[in-house]
Length: 239
Image 1 (cartoon, helix red, strand yellow):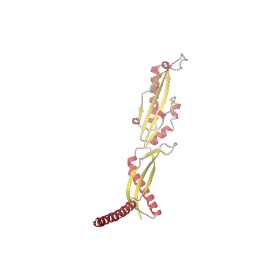
Image 2 (tube, one colour; image 1 turned 45 degrees about the vertical axis):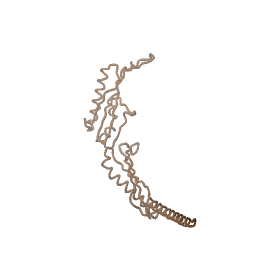
Image 3 (cartoon, rainbow, N blue to C red; image 1 turned 120 degrees about the vertical axis):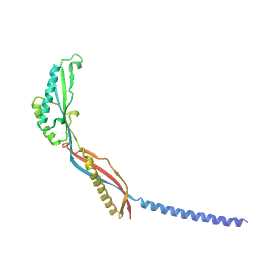
Image 4 (tube, rainbow, N blue to C red; image 1 turned 60 degrees about the horizontal axis):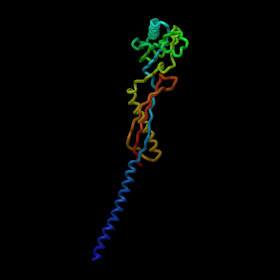
């Protein structure tokens, strides 16, 4: 009776063992196949261009001092007229010139400790700002800015609020071509890698476009911008 039970049990155990071995082989074979299909290479493609700035922001700042407040404001007003005439003399449109409110300081209200009285009680700082799309014309005027000083204006400069700013606003116009250029370069790099590794380049598995950056070409030429983008692409590889 026990022999009759032992026979089927041995057959069942043998079948389970063989089945587990076959299943293991199939899983191992499948893992290799998936690994082969997932052979990829990740490459980066760079596109760069130099472009001229298409907007310039030029703050022109001057100061005035007086002991009479009314006379001080008259001096600032005359200075505004002088700056405007100077700019328009270079063909800069009146619409591109904006005149801010002067910042006036009463030094007598700032005295502490009974020190000597300042020579002038009131000082004013005035800013006239040029915002123009005609960058070359404005740059020509900048080269002659010393003429304003010779006319009697005390020009300010060197601070963060008087720095000339150049902008490039035409990114959308060049973006498609630059993305195509970066992607093409990435494919060339991937193709070279595939050839060197005795593989064939397959389809794209994944692609991502980096952020566009716009920076000055160098610190001496801020009116020339360098536009840059990097695309990252993953390709499948096959033997």
